[in-house]
Image 1 (cartoon, rainbow, N blue to C red):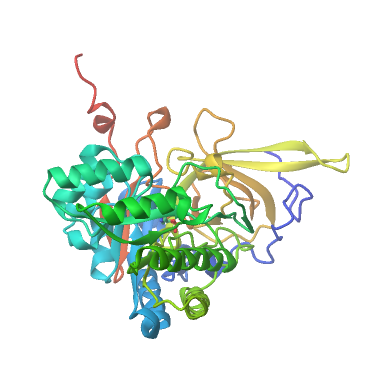
Image 2 (image 1 turned 180 degrees about the horizontal axis):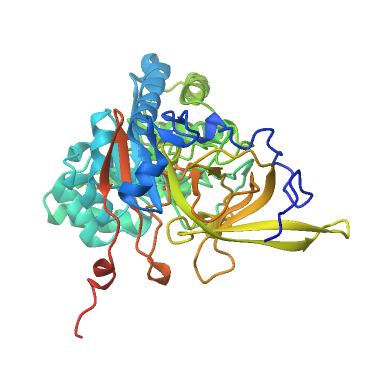
Amino acid sequence: MTAATTGPSPLAPAWLEYPEDPNALAPQLWASGVQRNDDGQIAVQGLGVSQLARDHGTPLLVLDEDDFRGRARAFRDAFDEAFADLCGGVDVYYAGKSFLCTAAARWVAEEGLRLDTASGGELAAALRAGVEPAHIGLHGNNKSDAEMRRALQAGVGRIVVDSLDELDRLTELAAEAGAVAPVMLRLTPGVHAHTHEFIATAHEDQKFGLSMAGGLASQAGQAVARALAAESVDLRGLHCHIGSQIFEAEGFGVAAEKLLGFLAEIAAEHGVALEELDLGGGHGIAYTPADTPRTPADIATTLAGVVRGACTKLGIRCPRISIEPGRAISGPAGFTLYEAGVRKTVTVDGADGTTHPRRYVSVDGGMSDNPRPVLYEADYSVALASRTSASGAVLSRVVGKHCESGDLVVKDAYLPEDVGRGDLLAVPATGAYCHSLSSNYNMLTRPAVVAVRDGRARVIIRRETEDDLFARETGL
Ligand SMILES: *Cc1c(COP(=O)(O)O)cnc(C)c1O
């Protein structure tokens, strides 16, 4: 085993700084209860990762439940305060798809949030957890009749309709059931937010929502007219969701102004003031030290200013606002604990014609517990968790154990040179869209999920077993 050269590498992406101290934890990446214990290992609320790994195995998704709840409360309180004198406060719907299980559904309900679901399964989780049906929303661009019937039967608070076809089917299903469907219409305001920019386009080339290009003659305008005319539909308001992992306020502001303008057009044409406006989720979080997320208070204040200005200009009363954060609540609350195995150093041709070493550290999970690097080229960070090291750092790539060369966990990170077999590595900000996107690829069993509250760890989802892998096989 040759030692790789420590020090900054020309292979590193521009955003990745060489760490002065590779043992230091950048606070914005970690749940509030995470720090290094006196013995050097990473701990959550004082519980060291070595003990967690011994008790629960690796890979392990560790959730700081207090941090999760704190972020939920922060959104609720900040938006309530910023919008109090505008529309009496805000309804915060936690986007369940980011991380959902019975326990998590209960946490959000206990913290005074509502819950968004996007399938029959997520709706089942919400109901099973005992979330008040009036506080559940149902999303989806292709809801089945069965999903809509179930939502009507359960009495969910809102069904967010995504197309004219769906509006017609829901109208019929509600009439058949003798129910009145509470409907929000999902519109595409022509604002497509990218990670670090947004572009306003006249036309949205994507599968979600009703186009509002062309004002009241648009699909959205037709949907409003149909929904208002349908006796089995109670049109509550309008909805938009402009994307995910957004850092700038402008995208949300432009979308809010467009939808408020549309509400004013609807009021002028139909004489109806729709009561609700949902501005969606998508608030960005830090995956690397280069990411600079804004606080809920900052987002709320900016948005309240935009909404206040637009309502005044348009001469309309402010509708009840709702938002749908997912990642910003569940993401930073979690980290994934892996055990390091094989390591290799390869030689890579640099742009300058010289060659440079790159360290590969393989861990005992990968794209089956976090497919985001493969799906979205998402960047993550990593820290040596079971100890500190006095070694210098080397540019490293943390990879999984799957049969894909694209199976990256952390594409670029500086790790201490001596990291090797048996060390525990922790990848922060994996609370969102990791467990919910996980798979059994290569017949790996999915990790357990442990929630830490008041200094105590509790398994909320047990590790999958080999029996689980074969549980659905029949006819043998
Ligand atoms: C995914 C989604 C959200 C949550 O997005 P985050 O990036 O997790 O905040 C909110 N609303 C809708 C409609 C979504 O599809």
